[in-house]
Amino acid sequence: MRFLTARKRAEGLGAAHSGTEHHWYMIVSSVGLALIVPIFLFVFGRALGGTHDEVIDTFSNPAVAILTILVLYVGLQHFRKGAQTMIEDYAGGMTRKILIISVTVLSYGMIATGLFAVLKIAL
Image 1: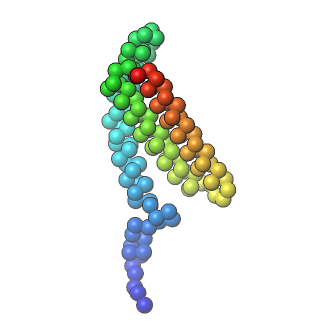
Image 2 (image 1 turned 30 degrees about the vertical axis):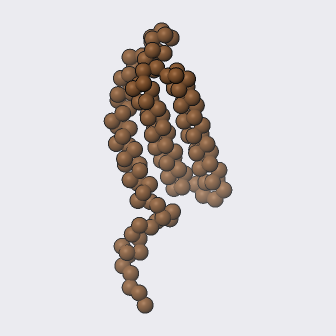
Image 3 (image 1 turned 60 degrees about the vertical axis):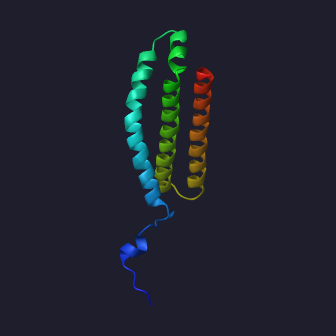
């Protein structure tokens, strides 16, 4: 007979066996977003209200395009994982599966649309 403490049984596990990894991803992505979103808002705010040519010039700058792509990708991945956690906590059965698939499709669709728009402006 093996004797396992409660900590030893729970260590590294969870319902999906990836809770610690998911938690650290959310912490790292939130710190990254806390650093890059204010810079993006400053750049976006300066371009807001400008003429079409001024906005195109701003977002065709490689540094601004890369920053925008990073905000889109990291922000929407953070949204997807956070929404998935919320859905897993509060929904069950087939509704849970449909909602998770819907959030995943929505976030990847928004990433693809945003990347297409930024690349079309930048290139």
